[in-house]
Length: 394
Image (cartoon, rainbow, N blue to C red; front, side, top):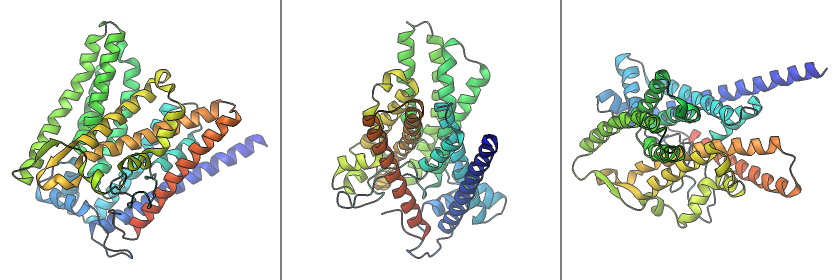
């Protein structure tokens, strides 16, 4: 009887996961198609950057591999917007799958069905909506789940792949690096930068700190492996230099990168510090209760280091000229939030599953779970708003 119940449970969980994938593919395809054709919805015209990215792909002015893929689908192959929408929907589903693979790597002993549900949930969470504190749901806040920018969607998928490879890499590289692994890591970094250059600005400095710490810990004995590990990053930066040149040439004189305090962050928030907390309440609360894990769990610590560099990029780098108000240095921090939600979800699941919790711990993890659910409700509400034609500037 137990085996039969277990079999029924497995089938039920499998059916639920399939249903969630089909729901994501269907709803995101509908959203992306309507964004691509400027469909008039109940709340307004479906607003996004997708039509612009398609146009740049067709006109040959694209800087991103994602834009060029639209040019290939709709220009070379002669397909229509349905192909572009389907491509983005499949990419969204693939991102959930690689996020699940990352959760499996972070906590291999976890139940794969529960981790699949966590991967879906982390793919919808949004900042906590507190209109009495800060007016907007999205503007001025940051989220790892953005539905209006196709190049970010491409970068998000590729960046999770990089993290999957890197977390395995850092466990073994100090004892030797296989050429196959080195080439795979290099290809992954080139791929993510071809999609969008923001991720590398968060990941590269965190990786540099990690390599330096390892070199010091090993008293220089593994220096050659640290150098070999850094070369893929340097190679991938050539893509960033090319993209930067294309973007600023396209925008004309006056365009450039400057040190500044985040323009959009201050423009859209009455209370900026609260906005930072609204965007990352769940992971920050997990960190507050598990800060000792920074010493014990190197993956947990490295993920927070990436998050920190992403936050610094968001707050202190900006652009001059026509792109000043676009907030393009926020994309890296957006992915960092997606990453840290996944890592903290894995950490919370690990703590709850592996321990008999005291009453105090039960209260703490109950609050953590409530925060996560609040983020999720805000995210689902936001997605429904977009699905009805509401603008993302809300």
